[in-house]
Image (cartoon, rainbow, N blue to C red; front, side, top):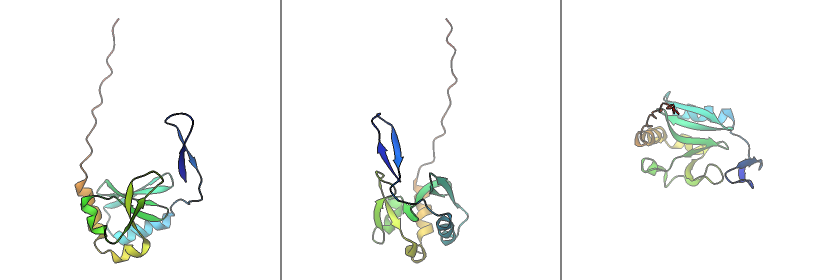
Length: 133
């Protein structure tokens, strides 16, 4: 699936390009390999976001694990290819199925990424003021 711009500024639509959505079995396999209950996933448009301690650290797209490129994930630099998770997205480290077993410290790297990501700021909702006229 890819996105294309329309004639209307800011409006995009999805075009099927033959890519299949990630299989649920792939996500279950990744979670089994990580072997820690602090990892969770959420489905997003047929793909998945991987969370470590509640923070997004990677995505599972087209049955591959895409890990955020940050200083905390530098250990993956020499062992993983880089590429976009979706057309037009920034690059991520691509962890292939065979690497899930061989990268013994992958769960530690993902938790280090989570630690390096700042906590979300809580937004303060402003009360609507009534205009008297």
